[in-house]
Structure formats: C-alpha cells, structure tokens
Amino acid sequence: MQGGKYPYPIQLANIKKNQWRLEKFINLGYDKKELQKKEGELWQEIKKIADSSSRPPNTCPAFPDSKFIGYGWEWAVYELPNKREIVKVPANIFKEVNEPEYLENTRYAYEACTKHLRSFVVDTTFERIKNNNRKINILKQRKIIGKEITSINTQKVNPQLRKNLSIFAKGILALLEEHDWIPDLHLKSQEGSWDVWNLMIENDKPILFDFTAYYDVWRLYPQRTREEKKIKGKYWRDFLNEINK
Ligand SMILES: Nc1ncnc2c1ncn2[C@@H]1O[C@H](COP(=O)(O)OP(=O)(O)OP(=O)(O)O)[C@@H](O)[C@H]1O
Ligand SMILES: [Mg+2]
Image (tube, rainbow, N blue to C red; front, side):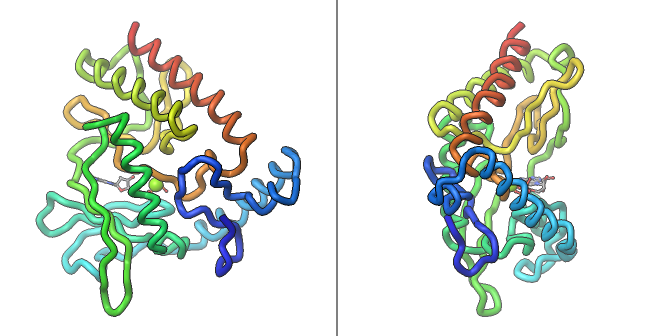
C-alpha cells in the first residue's frame, strides 16, 4: 500500500496475501533487481528514522503509574500498576502504527497465529482508546514471566520444552503454508544452536508475544516472499527434525 500522507511506502502490518509494500514499483513493471534496489533504499530510509528516534518515556502518559519495560519499532511496552498486565502503545517512531488499520491488521495477524499456535500465543486484546482528545492504538497482554531467549541448543533442551518446541515448529510450518508468512522470529542455524528472536520461554513453553514486524520482509514484493519461504521453510523443517531426534 502506498501511503499518501507518508513520504515512503507504508504497509500497515497487513499480512494478507498480495499486499505488497513495494506495490507502486511492482505496478511500474520493475524487475527483481530493481525491486531489490528499492528494498535497499526503503530499508535505509526507515532505519535512519528508527535510529534517530528517542527512547519512549518511563511512564506512558495514557496510563498513570505504568512502568516502561521495552520497545521495538512498533510498540512501547509498559507494565501496568497491577504488575500482571502490560500495555503496548505506538512507539512513536513510525506514525502509521497509530492508524486504526494498523491495529486491525495486527489483530488479523494475531488471529492467524493463534489458529496454528494456540496457547503458545499470549492472549491479547486490541483497543483504540481516547486520551487527551487523541485516539491511540493499544494492545493489552498479561505480563509473561519468562525469559526472552536468543538461542536454542536442541541438544540441551529438557523433554517438556522439546515437546513444546516441536508442536510450536509444526504450527509455524502450518502458518507458513496457509499465509506465506510467519512472525518475525528470525530462526537461523548457528554453529550447533539456533538463533531466535521475539520468543519467550515460560514454564518450558515458548510464548509468542509479537505478531507483526514494521519492516515485514514477507510483504515487500512477490519474489522476496518466494525466497523467504524457501529459506525460512527449510530452517523450520530442519529445526523440527533436530528437535524430534
Ligand atoms: N507480554 C509481554 N510480557 C513481558 N514482556 C513483554 C511482553 N510483550 C513485550 N514484552 C517486552 O517488550 C519488548 C518489545 O515488545 P514487542 O516485541 O511486542 O515490540 P515491537 O515493537 O513489536 O518489536 P519489533 O520491532 O521487534 O516488531 C519485547 O522484546 C519484550 O522484552
Ligand atoms: Mg513487532
């Protein structure tokens, strides 16, 4: 989707098939090489914006006594005073994250994930609230009491986690088959272990808490999706084989 009021192509977290961030250039008949070049330019442009943005405040103005716990390119995350819940508000890096459509698309991605990953996805509610005469997109989740991991050594996981990771990987492969898309987990084999992002382990269970990526490589242009599907599909199949050994 092309974003009239935005200076660069936006995509609004839409994971539906045939929604391309570089649609304008696809329609102009650009070939793969030219699209790759546009992809590189877009990446540079948005990376510059992200790098020059400031860290969100320690308390979210819309939620008094909330406590900042982390952020990404989409959301700033705050623990609520009850300490059991967190709220995600736009991180204010890319303005379109506050569009109503962005919220609806994130909900769609969440539902696509829960269909295949079931209880491995943290329960999430989606609202557009009014604060100081301004409407804001918010996501609410329980606070996951777990560790965000960056790697998995398939030789060292305990039997319970092994079983859960196997079911999780099968769910990811089913999601990939249905939507030509999976969430931004960055699974990659790395010298005997597996790199992974955006995943927490809680009571020997992987928990997905982030459904969309602001820069979604799956929805740039068709050739990119095909390549990504080949590469990521292989990684997840290899991971599943290893975890099942
Ligand atoms: N339910 C949760 N419980 C505890 N911590 C959380 C939860 N959700 C998010 N966090 C923390 O907040 C951080 C940012 O959240 P999240 O990944 O959802 O933001 P994002 O903007 O979607 O990130 P990205 O740029 O990777 O898409 C996470 O890395 C994690 O540390
Ligand atoms: Mg995200």
